[in-house]
Length: 314
Figure 1: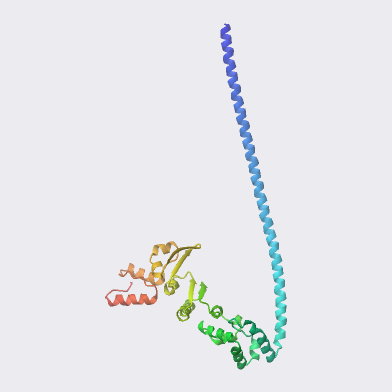
Figure 2: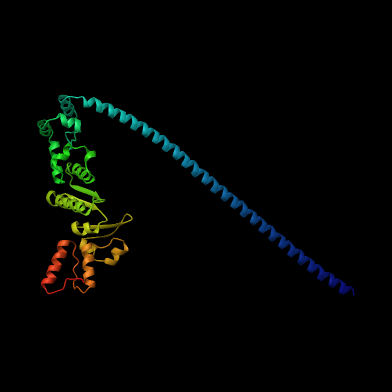
């Protein structure tokens, strides 16, 4: 009986010990999970606080920028007001000048620009005081004025523009005057960024023909930045295609426009002449030609017609 009691006590003790260990392990696990949860809550609170601080910082930056912009705007308004008053005062004083005083002023100012080509624009008040002979004498005295006069002819503007205020010119005329000012510096390279943007088809054609003439007659290298594929195919000698600042394709117009699927992928499209030929081919027109301009397209159609082909697209 004693042995049985001892065995029972031993088993119970072992069971109690195992129970205590299980309880201890469970307690430790609960405590660890509680600590982890607490740590997560602390981390979340810190993250929320960091977000709040960032929000406050951005708001302070915006408010600071707004204050700075208001200061700049106030300063700008003040400067504009002062300049307006100064110009108004100068205008009223100059309006009272005699013809001799006007000429004396021009002869004081123009020598400062003796090494630069320039366009001299006379206001209505000054223009009324000067005679045609006075204007001719100024041109002879300052050859850079003659150069400016010649560049106006190059860009297709009449001499009357020389006697107009810039505010009296049309948008197209102002663009041509700006180009004339650049040409008057006799550059070897002319970089043009979307020069025909905003022009109607007639104006765009005239502008591009003018650039082509400059390249052909004056030997000026023209670098044209454009999204107009018709202009590229019609006028370019060499094409560089850029995407996000990286050169992705180079070659002649014929080489660049050879892969229609690639052009569509890059959202460049095809010149209208090639689009027209593709529509003809869909109607049974047999050709591998890809005309880059209207003249080449006309030659293709005439040649096909003479050879007995049907160029109609019904």
